[in-house]
Length: 248
Ligand SMILES: Cc1ncc(C[n+]2csc(CCO)c2C)c(N)n1
Image 1 (cartoon, rainbow, N blue to C red):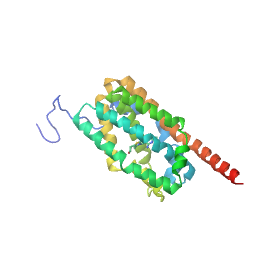
Image 2: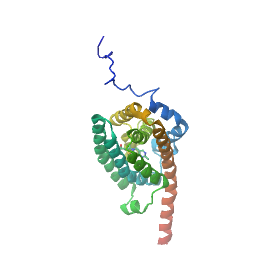
Image 3: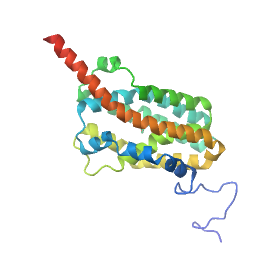
Image 4: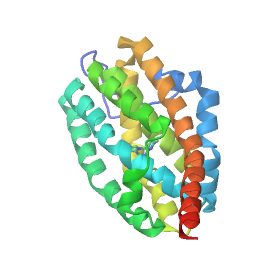
């Protein structure tokens, strides 16, 4: 019998099963469950969802996050170069265009609304988490190992989707908060997370050790990144105080 619901099985072109329980990516996430849950329920996420996050915290977070986009593009470049099918390569190329487009205008509009000047952005040092992300993106890209690159990419997308889809509706009134949630929980984004999961479910067993190790380190970095946004708040407040001192 051959119909849409029961296609003839072939070994050459069997469609990948929908991502779900039992696959490689499911096991990866279960392996880091406590760290994953801590990230998606972080104080930063709860305050963002409630629309109560301090402007200084949001500003410090976005200054760091904007910086990591360049290295992120290198990682996508690594995926474009190492993908083992033309269809996957095309999907990553489209994604690279999206990252270089919409999100960049969000950052600039948000900096404007939060009163973050270009000189403040330039004079703010990288937090250790930002340095860690830049390094792991490069490290993964340089392996030219498709599974390793997918493991890092998947955390940055899947974990962000997971906290964003938990946001209560209606979204907060400030576009700075609402758009940041919506960017990570819209149909295109969900489709991309599913794509990454099916790809890694398909190729993950080829180098499970390296993929698992990179996945774990990236989840830890996501937690550090949220944690250190609150460190940045203190840093910015200090700078403001020093500015006031100087004017007295
Ligand atoms: C620390 C940190 N981790 C993950 C993301 C999510 N993310 C990074 S680049 C990108 C592509 C544009 O959609 C997305 C979704 C983030 N922004 N910041």
